[in-house]
Length: 168
Image (cartoon, rainbow, N blue to C red; front, side):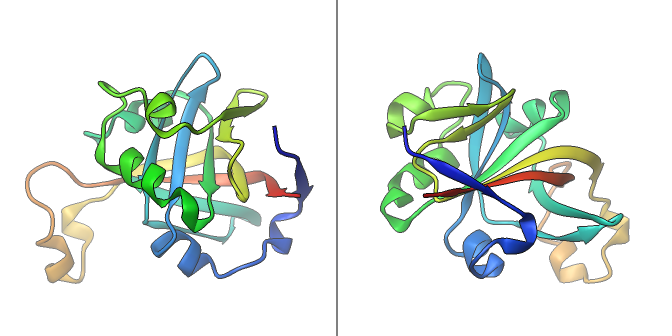
């Protein structure tokens, strides 16, 4: 297994907009015995309630959604471009019927009950502080509201960044 060094959240290097929106990330929740991961390109990081936080948006039909609701801890994992194919698979297949670890060849790693992947370049280990479903009536931009059909609005998950691991 590769080595990681723990740093403070304020020492994260890179452009968070690029990292999330263009490079993507894996959102992983569960325990070493039972977890799921999915690719995400929505989210962010900053300060909320005086704490370093990361936030992610997940639709209720995603398999990872139930893990995010059930478990307090989750991770956001960032990779080099050479893992794009693995990220594509994790974003297009459901963990309900695909063993994503086997299909991608990624190596699960653990920090207590938090699951991340050894191939990562950056890992945010988060503790869920808050979650809430988006509400269609709260959109002030109706064009964005119109991108949703039916009852598939995302839930936002806000987590305190408890640890940041960077690849040595």
